[in-house]
Amino acid sequence: MNKTLRILLIAAVAVLFMSVNSCSLINYFSGYVKSWESKAPGRDTLANNLNRFVGSVRSARGNPDAHYLLGDYHQGRGRHRDAIEEFNKAIRIDPQFVKAYNGIAVSLDQMGEHERAQEYYLAALEIKPDLDYLYNNLGYSYLLQERYEEAADAFEKANTLAGGQVSRIRNNLALANSALGKADPASVTAAPKHQAFVEYEAANHLLKNGGFEEARDHYSKALSLDPDLQAARKGAEVAALLADVKRYVAAHEGFASDAGQDRPVALDRDGIEVSNGNGVSGMAKEVGSFLKKQGFNVVRLTNADHYQYAKASVYYRGDAEFTALRVKGAIPGITQMKKVGGFDRDSVRVRVLVGRDLAGERNAFKEGEN
Image (cartoon, rainbow, N blue to C red; front, side, top):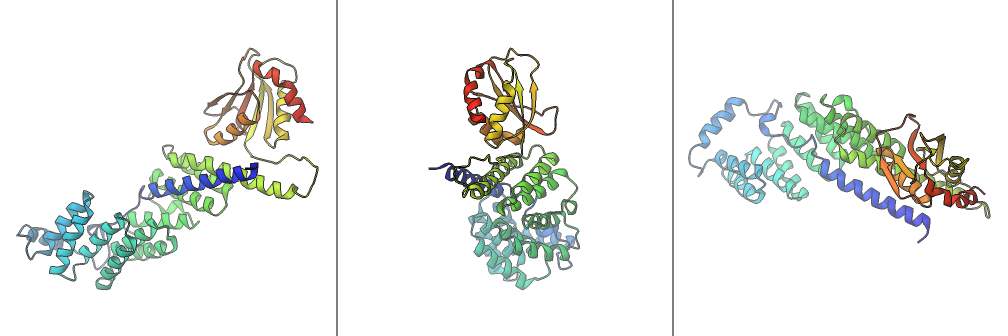
C-alpha cells in the first residue's frame, strides 16, 4: 500500500470516528418535548391536565388517561414495548388521544424504528395540527436520522406555534441549522455548554463537506465554551488530520507531472519549534531543515535552557497531537512525546527538543537537507 492510500485510509477511519461520536452526542441538550411543556394555543390547560390526572386514579379499565400515565411510566424507564402496549390501550378507548400517538412515536424512535414513529407523529398531527411538541418530536426523529432539512422545517413550525417560548425547541432548531451549516449560537439558550454544542455540530457539518480548516476552528470554539466536550477535542484533531490529507493529495497531484523533481509537500500549518538541547553546534538548524524538507512548518529555532538533555522529545499542544505524531515518526530515534498546555509563542504548537541521543543521527539529517 503506498503512502497516499495509507493516508486516505486514516482519513476514512477519522470520518467514521466522527460519525459515531456525533450520534452519541446528539441529545446533549436537545430532545423531545413533553405535552405539558407545550405553549401552543391548542395545548391542554393545567386545569384539564389536573382533572385528567385525578380521573386517572380510577380503575384503568375504560380510562385512557390511566393507560397513558402507565405507558409514560414504562417509557421513562426504557421499557418501550410495555409503553407502546399501554398507549395502544389508550387509543383503543379514545382514538383521538393525541398524547398516546406521540408516546408510541417516541418509543418507536428510541427503538430505532423511525419510519413507523413518523407515521404516528403524522397521525397525531392529523388530529391536532396546532401542537408545537408534535412538530418538535417529529423534527427530533428526523434529526436522529440526520435528515437535517426536514428536521429544521419541523422545528421551525414548532417554534412558531410555541411563540419562541420553549427553550428546548429553540435549541433543537439551532442544532438542526448548525448541522446545515447555518450555525447561530446567539439563538441558543445562553448556557455555554449549549452554545458549545452548536459550534460542535457546525464543525461536524463542515467536516463532512470538506471544510476541514474551518471545522477545526469551530471545534476549537466549542472547546473554549465547554472544555469538557471531549468529542470537540477529538474533532479538532481529526479535522487537522483531514486538512493535512487534503493538502497532501492536492500537492501530490500538482507535482505528479514534475518527473524527477523532489519538492516538499506542505503537510500541516501547525508551527514547529526545534530547540537544541545537546549543545552540538548547528544541530537545531539541521533538524529544522530536515523537517522542512518533509513539508513541516518549522517556524522557530532556539537553544534549550541547558545542553544536558540525554533524550530527544516532542512536546505538543492538545490540538496538535497528530502533527506531533508525524514529527516523531519523521525524526529517527525519537521515542518520547509529552502533551503540554502551551508554549511562549502562539505560533508554536509542537516543540522538538534535540537531545544527545540524536547526535548519532546527524548524517541522516544532513542527507535529508540535500
